[in-house]
Structure formats: C-alpha cells, structure tokens
View: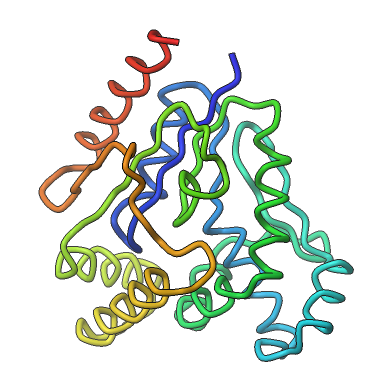
Length: 224
C-alpha cells in the first residue's frame, strides 16, 4: 500500500533524525526535503547567484546539474556527479536556505521533484510545508516543535561535532531568523494544519518521539 507520512516543524526540532529513524522502523523510503532546499542554496552559492533575477534563476534550475536519487530507501543529492553531504550543512547554507526557499521558482521546482518521488512509494518525508502543501493527502501529518533554547543547544552541538564552532547566541539568533522567515513568507509558510499530530520534542528523547509517531502511523494504516 502506497502512503506518505509528512513531518513538518521548526528548524532543529528533530525532524530529520526522527523521519530517518521512523522510515527505518517502517521499512519505507526516507526523503529529506530540507536537503533538497539546501542543495539548491549550495548551488546558488557556488554560482554566485543568490540574488539572481527570476529569469536567470529559472535557467539555472532547468539546466541544473543537481540530481536527486533514491538509493536504498534514502534520498541522495548529487552535483555534477559528486554526492553532496556535509557541504549542505555549513553555516553559510544555514544562513541562506530560508531566503532561497522563499522564492516561488525554487519551491515550484522542488515540490514537483518531491511529488514525483512520492508518486509510487511508501514514504516518510520532512520539511516545513510537506503536510500543508506537498502531500496534503498524507496518511499522517505530524507537526514537530521544540523550545528555542533546546533547539539552540542541539544545533550548536551538531555544529561542534562537525568542527564548526559558533557561539550560543549566534546559533540562537540564526534559528530565530529562520523561524521568522519560514513562518511569515507569503508562499507556503510554516504552518500547523488542523489535522496534524502535534509533537513537542523539548523533553523527549529521539527514541521516544520516534516511538510516539510510529504508533500513530500504524494506527492510521490499520484503520485504512
């Protein structure tokens, strides 16, 4: 049976890790849509095209050497045949990904890619408009959030583990700016749909939040 589990939520609330582990538990494909937006941001940084006109942006996207491949039930991003990984998680990409994601051409380009990937698959995916825009008919829509201080701690730890040192307040400010941009943009803003399963991860372990959502997914599937 084809189905989609759509996980939306704030930055650094645990969406990616939860979605990946949930997909493993369910034995289905994991699609990291955030990586797709980061990939376009990385491409624009590489091409010095962050403030390009719509015409130039459209040409760049249509002729883009970016590829999104599902291999072994996971999404991988390639640029000019090279797989991108840590390049997508740099502070520079962090800084620009929300403004890039605001652009209508970028969203149209990636939403089409996401829907194509999800057409014939059992899928868990995460982002900021997955349940509200990309897959409004998902078998389960989840909205994850977390208190800002805890999100800042988690993001700073993640950066430190990658050898990137940033001050607590700098990381916190970056997250606040992303929250504001994501929640107030005119096109596909971050929003909690009325039918979303709400999960506050502030005081939950990864294992606890995965188990909570897994139980709800299985309940929905059995009820189909």
